[in-house]
Length: 481
Ligand code: GLN
Image 1: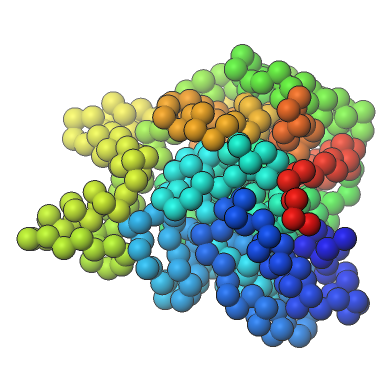
Image 2: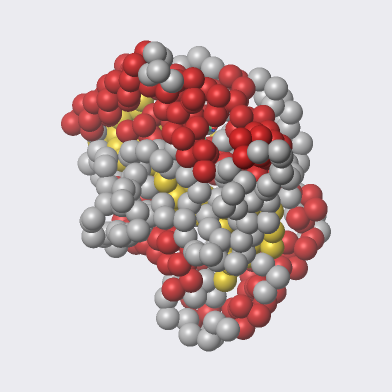
């Protein structure tokens, strides 16, 4: 078995025992990437110094030392192109590292490259990238999900050992689900957003995409924690998430969200969600249905709040400070020309939606109303958590869909996140783990949602289920191995 096929935990053990070197790991990752990247298109850019960087890792004194990890290309990397898969960030070389990148550096990780995404993380298929369409390693005709599609595809295809993604409405969990890997969105504020290019600041959260739940806990441990540079960072001490890897769910109270098991959810997705629940019940958890009546309005509220925040956040791309510059007669025309050329269709759609929702005379009717709905959804979750320790649902209503299938129908695309968006609105932690494959052999994700800052219980339930399911399938592609 090649080293790129192993997990963080497995590699760490071998590295620590000096059975292998970081250089050997990096070599296997790189040669595999060289073989399959032309099929997958997971990366916007690769780290040309990967092998040299790996040689510089001489001490294996922490879990990520010498581990090749990929970073979504909306996180700032000092001196390394950061594009958000947008033309408007043309040639942008950040002068600082995002806090998460800094934290990984402190652990002596090695960066494989920057992964592809839907432009500014707006989308659910990675088709909105200005550069390339990432393909799902399970079936190259299908999308990997989005917006962290490059990160999820790279992990699924063993083109890195783990990756970072960002999740505003599902962008870690939905691609993890479609690519058959583990993805976790932590509690809002647990992981610093400093250096993450902002999409919707009240929803954005960085999290890990990994091959299994153990690696998820290890990676979360490395990136979580308070950061003075992010005013929304929570001032809490992080527990040891690895202690949650006990597979002990006896007595755990689990609620199945009724509203997310209705019509429109693919048959196999429903069946495998029920199957996962049965397994948890057999292991001693108690399971019951729970209703969150306002989830019906979650998508509508999200598509007001997220574009409103995006329209404000994206105003900074004015051609003056960084990125693309299309010269015109005067300043206003320079802005217009630059933004017209630099932003893709979906980004423009969001800016227009958001600007409209925030404009005088409409603010209360749209933005104000959406915020009220958000409060009702938060209250729904609070009530549900009075009775249950964790809540579950499918991660995505369907498995991976065909490239192009929803690209021209924004509404259909928006529906892909129906199960994940409510969690962001409420700022809660949630994980997606693979729970089987559908009739086409495509992976299905199982979502576990936790109480505010209760990542440990989410990880515990996920780990238990993972052990019981024993999901071992791998994408068949990897033909050049
Ligand atoms: N697909 C959702 C959107 O397009 C969520 C994206 C995300 O989480 N970044 O807004």
